[in-house]
Length: 113
Image (tube, rainbow, N blue to C red):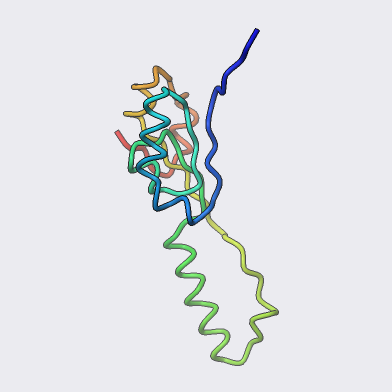
C-alpha cells in the first residue's frame, strides 16, 4: 500500500516568507493540512501557525537596548522568545473538512474566520 503525505509543516526560515502565498496556495490545491512558523501564512490562508510574538520580541529588543546603553554586556543577556502565539484559520479548516476542537480554539491567540 502506497501512502502519501498527510500534512505539511513549514519550518521557520525567513527566505520562505517571500513565497508564503505560493506555499499556502499549493497546500490548498492539494487539500493538505499545514502548519507554519510565521503568522503571515495563516493570514494568507494557511491552516495554523505557532511562532514567537513579534510585538513581544520587539519590546524585548527595546529592553535589551536600554540595558546595553546602561553598560550591560550583550553576551550576558539570553536571547529567546518569551511569548508564543497560536493562530488558527477556521475558513481554511472548513475548506479542508476539518473540525478544530473547541479546546484548541480556546487556546488560540487569534482565530481567523
